[in-house]
Length: 369
Image (cartoon, rainbow, N blue to C red; front, top):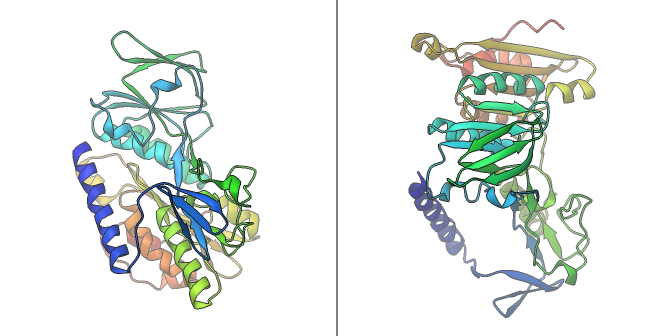
């Protein structure tokens, strides 16, 4: 896996190079620093432009505490010399949940530590509850309300983690996935008038323009949805605005996203909590079941699907799923939601049988509150 990962990254980078080359884009390899609002210096050479876009992405952040030097981030975890048979994953977001699932699936004993009450903060609460139950069934040791005080390296090379609960945990590696920061170090921002937000991201207006009129920023550095497709779409929206005189519009409301854990989590639109804070008449539909494949195979894994509807307009405002292939299933529904699909339209859609996806078009009875 480690070696194949390197080959795949090289292959993808080659594709991107070919795409840029075919578009007559000059690729300058090196670290750029701002000299002024229209000039960037790379490898000792200066390049000037009417407009400059900052899209350098984010970088994993490991907080400083006793023994933090023994922890690794998602950047290094696949480059370890030996497979960690016992792994502690610290964090409760996408990356932490996904890596806990990956290494659990590869056969490691995995403990996931999160200081909050429940992981995946910001997701629908019911989704979080169901996901925690199903992930624990897979064998991941979920420890909520738990944080790391220190890490001690033992004589045999293993690590002893001292926890805030007073317990200790002995592992072979510690993966820290508690957050990412915008990669703004040594960009020369002190030479330009680019303002940052209170959280350290680049502050932009609705057209991705910074406080320096000639400089724009998009992607992870502006603190929005830290997803590659979102950054790509922001770039396209900005290009259409600057060079085709179109409005700089990107609807962030119904962007589909998936957590690639086991089972998958997929979501589009509002959580139940968000919907109820915005609409006065939210109607909820839910199916919590064991898929046919699991019934036949003897697995106790259960799936959950959920629809949230604005009862006054019949418009579907949220879709959520915990189950196999959630991302594949929800991608098509994202188009429907973007087009303003109603619950009536879902009800008139003939399902594909037998599939999990048909649950979304066969839920008829709302959940009684």
